[in-house]
Length: 496
Image (spheres, rainbow, N blue to C red):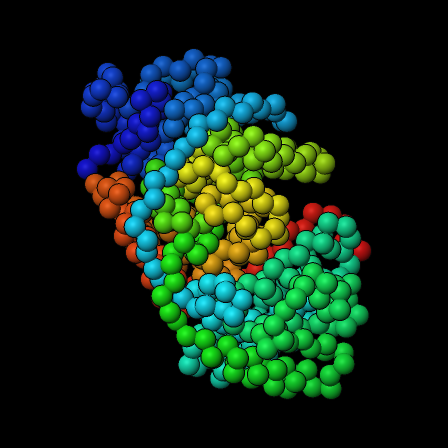
């Protein structure tokens, strides 16, 4: 088993695939050049210098700069936050240098899903309780507990999605709340939806209906708590009606060309860009080859790798939209007097990620090699098949909710640290290393750490594709088995 990896022939650092002790000597080969003797212990996922790197010189990983040396770095030494600095600036000017990548079609594949009356496909048949305002969160959760008797037949879950918003908001925050709630109310994974209002909130039911648009009265019901003498009893009666409607749907074969898959990472480590993220990228290419759709988000974790995505845009218009996607998010940071590159997190650094460029180059591996065919604003439903970019922050719950709101049936979440959270749709946790998979098997659904043990990317991609199809066909992920359901809305401004 190889204990270290030089990712690109042009790299001047390598990554330890397992903990390496000082005195370890690397083997010379066509990529590594001369043998290197380590002069420091190197933790798993961390980098070491393959040559002497003078202060001010670029650190090259993935074949691209991930920062500059803050001091002279001797060959064989540990390269991390103590001797590397970000090389990124603020707003940048970009030029379109199209690469025109191509994904060749492959054989059609199918999953067992639900066909809604409006023609859309779904991977779950659940009853959702959507509060319009945080004031009724406890009521929504009480209704969820009381309504579990409705989970039978093809009704697979009853879930409430509490959130703290819907009132005392201004401007974009209020619009975001209404847009995301309307998106979730319309999501095909919900066979029936109870919209639970208070009655005096800014985003009350009458206002929210303007954002929902046309809806099926058999599928969506409304209850204003201030107008009811027994809101829980009345809610249960409405949910019984919704359960009768949702229970009429049954799984049937549906083409994978109708699948929409969101892609997100969190708690990344030094192996994320080597194991789990490339597997998700290969999965994305495979699904797109079958006519399917994927969505990549967390814009701040594109900083430093954005040109890799910009040059894959299918046309100049999409390139311009991607430039705005990046620079608008940087302006958001600046407008709040925050450092754009105050990233990565403590957990990222412990796992071996040193700079935002390092993190971003690993993060964007999830996009595979397909052309970018759509760029979405926050809360905008996906409308182009293929690879899409979505405006949302790096926060795990906010970004995953945004993916669901844009139409993702399933969210793929790679992690080197582990997390139990869920989102409104099945959220597949994918470990980057074996230790995490073994330790947190109650959280992790699929392990990509085997890539460092000699597993191959094509083999792991195919097994992962089969697993995602099984999830789309009804197999529960770990967070679903635990009964977890989370959502979070992007807040940017003033609270009244």
